[in-house]
Structure formats: structure tokens, C-alpha cells
Image (cartoon, one colour):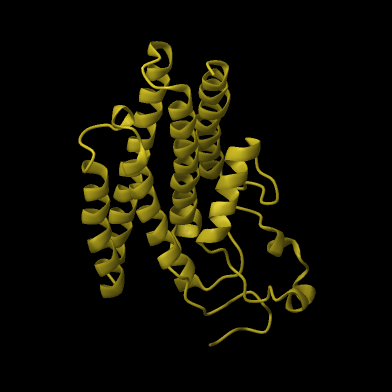
Length: 221
């Protein structure tokens, strides 16, 4: 492992299994939704995720970086469209009262969790040009988020084990979780405009689920 003592550059591979597990979790959550909240056949989204993930992993290992990036964006776009479609169907299902209140609460919770995972994957995919570019540049910190580790003075980073730090998927997952929970950034302020736009979309979806859907479902109990 190589590292400049100034603490600006690192050489440590970024684990990809966390993001792969997140895609699998989205597919599993989708299968757990009621049939009335699924766009298209039940098997469609999990199949698309599997079909796109397999070549994504292969192109990464073969060094086909541009194709890998395109496939990564395509997979994230597919799960985002599926999320939006399910949220629209959930909103449509409320006035009809076809679903029991507890079923609506269960569905809303699953979609809220999906919202967190989907946007965590977007943050992870775009920040600093994506995981492959971040790994190539071997730079400390992030370009689009101001994580707490980045605010520690350089000469004090070794004391906090932050001298070799750069964000991994779990860090973006935490950012997405706080965005959906508080409807705004907490410990990692947003720096890039694209991150602010995505955060607004994520907060809007979360607000629709939490305030409109869950509150009305509880009122029907």
C-alpha cells in the first residue's frame, strides 16, 4: 500500500460488494411489495437488475471503464423509474381504499427504504466521477459532499485514522438516510449542484411517502 505522508493521496481499493448488495436489496424489496404497487410483471425489475449487474461486474474486472459506467447508470435509472412508478401507484391506491391500512403502511415503509438505497447508489455512482475514477485519482475526501473527516486539519488526521480516508458506499447510504429522515443534510453538507438536485428529488419522494401516504393510512386505522 502506498501513501503520501501529506495525507492527500491514498492507494486503497474501494469495496464494490456493498453497492452490489444494495442492488440485490432493491430487487428483494420490490418482490415484497403488493402486486398492485408493482409496475409490469413481478419478475421484470429483478430480472433487469440481474441482467445489467452481470456485465457491470465483468466490465469492471476487464477494465472497460466507459461501458462499466454506462451500465451502472442504466441500472440506477431502471430502479429509480421503478421506485417512482410504485410511489405513483401507492398514491393512486389511497383514495380507492383497496389496500388495508396496515398493508399501506407496510408498502410505504418498503418504498421509503427503497428511496434511501436508490439515492445512495446515485450519490456513490456520481461523486468524483464515480468509484473507478475516485480509485484512480487516489485522493482524500469527496468532491460533492463535505464529510466530517474532511474538516479535520491535515496534521491531526492520523490521530483519528482519517489520513487515508475516502467515502465508501456506506457513507453515501448514511447521507441518503439522513436526507430521507430529516429532509436535509446533517453531518455532510452538499457541495455540488447535481447533489443538491438529487437531494431535492429524494426529499420530495420521502415527503410524499412519510407525510401524505403514511399519515393517511394511519388515519384510516
